[in-house]
Structure formats: C-alpha cells, structure tokens
Length: 348
Ligand SMILES: Cc1cc2nc3c(=O)[nH]c(=O)nc-3n(C[C@H](O)[C@H](O)[C@H](O)COP(=O)(O)O)c2cc1C
Image (cartoon, rainbow, N blue to C red; front, side):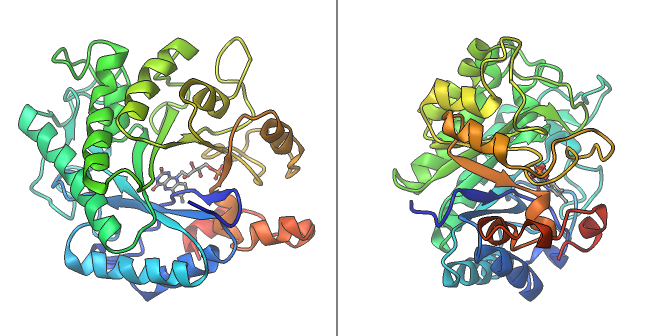
C-alpha cells in the first residue's frame, strides 16, 4: 500500500457520534487530516459484541446506519488522497456496568478481575470467546466492504485483547492464560479470523502497548524473548504491521538499552512498525507535568535512520493542528498550533 508520507494519525476517541453513527462533522474532522497524513487510524469503534462498548456517542462498526456513516468518512478521505483504517475495539474490563449501547450486557474480561485484583465482570466463556472473535472478523469484513484500506486491532492500553496479554488481569489456565504464549492466543485467534475473512492482501495492523490505562508501569513483556513470544503468533496469524504505543517513543524498551519498543518489534518480526509517543508535544500522554523533549524532531530522525521504525504515529499533535505535517515540511514550526488540553474538549 502506498502512503503519501510516513505519518499516521493515531486513534483518538471523540464521542461525537450520537447513537453510534458518525455524521457530517466527523466526515469533516477526518477530511481535514486526510490532506496531510499518510494514514489515518480512526477513533476506536465498537465491534458488534454486546459487551464491547460503553457509550452511545462512540461510533460503532456494525449496523448499517453506522457503516453508512463510515462510508461517507472513507469516501471523503479517499477524495483527499488519504488512506484510512478503522480501529476495532472491545473495551473488556473498561466497560461501565449498565452502559449503552447494550446496557444489559455483562462486563467481560479474561478472569473476572480488575487490574487492582478486585472482582469485575465475568470471565469469558468458550462461547464468549468465539463470539468475540467472530465480532472482530465481521467488523473487518464490513470495513473492507465499505472501502476502508485496512484495519487496526486494538490490542493496547488494557482493553480486552490487552487484558488477555497481561498477567495481572489474565489468570486463566485453559490455554488462553498461564504462559506468555497462552496469553497471546486470543489476539492471534482474532488476527487469524480477520485475516481469513479479508484475504491475503488487506492490511491488518495490531496496536499494542506495555502500559495500561490503569498502570503506566505495567508490562506484558519483560525482555526481548518475552516480546518475541507475544508478537510471533500475531505475525504468524496474519498481522502485517505493528502499531507500538508508548508514552515516550525514544526510550529503550528493556534494561539492555539496545532498542526502542518499535525497534525491537521490527527486529523480532521483520514487519513494519509504527513508533508513537509524544512526537511534537511537550508532555507525555496523561502526564501533563512530566518532562519531555522539546518539539525538536532530531531524535526521531536519528532513530529512523537507525532503522528503528518505518512510520510515525501522531496523536495530540494532529488533534490540535491538522496541518502539523505540512508546517513541519515547510519549516513553519512557529505556526504550529501547539497541543493544549483545551483541544481535547473540542476535538475539532
Ligand atoms: C483524546 C484522546 C483519545 C484517545 N483515544 C484512543 C483510542 O480510541 N484508541 C487508542 O488506541 N488510543 C487512544 N488514545 C491514545 C492515542 O492514540 C495515543 O496513543 C496517545 O495520545 C499518545 O500519543 P501522542 O503522544 O502522540 O499524543 C487517545 C488519546 C487522546 C489524546
């Protein structure tokens, strides 16, 4: 797949899709960014499993009303020469009890426990696992049908697929937990079902992170060997790019200091990797007072030239300034509208 440049808009939830249907303002929001970015990953979209979501303002990727809304977004992005993947999302333990769009549905996680070890929801049964896998595959099929250029599977930040990857929330002993390889099984089965549905040529990207919403210091892999155990089954199942979500893209992933997490991902799998985390912003995600680099891109270039990644993810930078890449290319850095928490309130 050809992209206009190496910059990828990161998925960012907006909650501006009443009834789960993206409307004209959502079309405009993505159109403005499609002009300047290589690839857009949409805000997280709920797959069609009843326990996937937690709001009736977050878009669905099931139901003909929502899919028709997304088709308008896709067509607008393509008209600008952009490319777009939906992010396929199941909240798992992060769902709120009794919330829309299916208030009656239970909270479903790997083991019925929260990151802090308290009881939360139910442990997914074999039938739940089959239904979850099928919901991702159906979402990918629908995304392909309405013209999306690929899909991203949300396996990061503590949501369902990541809750299976993480030993703290996954205490199963049934082949979906118990070892690192077993914890990676659900993600791999989802990826395999998606790949079987969309065929060999449709890009499937997998987003993962060490950090969780509930714990920035959490880890699914303590060493490159652990990471290889997690990523290899995903790659074997048909994932062809990894979107490596960190909060500081430049930090070494492990104690040896050898490579960043994106760098290890690329080295271990041989697949393209997206590096992401505080590019073009002055503070890490959800830590406004922490020290971060200046807006300088020197370090990013150094790591790129060292072969650590292929693509660069941009979250807050392109939230606040849809022309961020244009202004960087034209060296109009002082014209960049800097990220400010206020923009999150408006998400224009
Ligand atoms: C408002 C907002 C909403 C977000 N929603 C999602 C989401 O739906 N899915 C996801 O994987 N990450 C989500 N994220 C995380 C971003 O994709 C990204 O990982 C994070 O902002 C760090 O990248 P940055 O430092 O470039 O902003 C969100 C971030 C923000 C600021």
